[in-house]
Image (tube, rainbow, N blue to C red):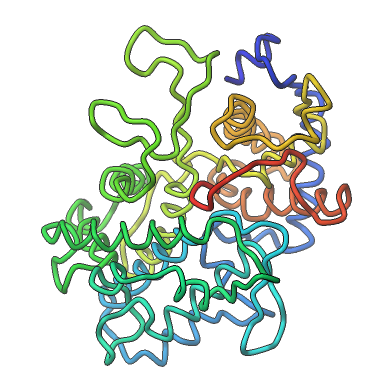
Length: 388
């Protein structure tokens, strides 16, 4: 897609790599402001559980009573999987009021706190003696009403895709329950059983990040709404674009898998905490989401061929949005090189996972707030709460 863009052969966007330097400057500024020593952690769900410097999950975890490293990892996998599923776009109006501080949080931060609160309260566990877990039996019972209560949704606090989020959680419960050989190695079927599966795949407790992604795609892929299928396999976050042509069954297909990759990034730390070594983290791509993509549009790296399209709403599966998201993934690699050059570091010191966190999504959010009063992305996407 990027090659086509550089050849001026895309229908919706122009690509101007000369503007990458300006985008990189914003990323470096955001990184230095948030992490002055450049000790940037990985981009993952765990960052959103930190509120005013307090790691909420760590606080709850140490009161949970579990001491076994693998038991802790299964619980962390449970939370990461459920919380990531809930972490598609919430929309500009929704806010979650933190019971502990009274502060209101929107978007990813609000969804993280809401899901953590529900997790700690045992709303995903069928075992009252072990609230901090998720299991198939309880997930199958998730209702729209209960999820709305947990997310504090109301007529005056609407969220995008409430019904769809509940449906994906129920699908997770059904899928996990139907596959005990994968998800019930040491317990009743639970999402955290994926941890034991990955341990079994590791070589002396060493595992490559792309292997984690592959297992996530294969074994959690069936929970996502079916849009396109290939060979009887639902493809999830994969879409068609007429400019991508092949001579086989993948003609026009553009795989993006934003939430699956976001989840993979979020599973790395629980694996590391359990004593495993995760290698080849740069084997994962950037994320095809609207903050990274918005950074490129707002800095002029990407420009709509027709400016009027910026005022319209676009379906998540439209060629324009597919084009935008695919270009975002490719451009993040180019951006990473410029950022590293400015900081005089290599990819080992600053892998893409740290640039995303430091980083590109933060810079995208910052510039959106300066350009638009509500901080919304420069392109309006009609989504269902199950993509990004």
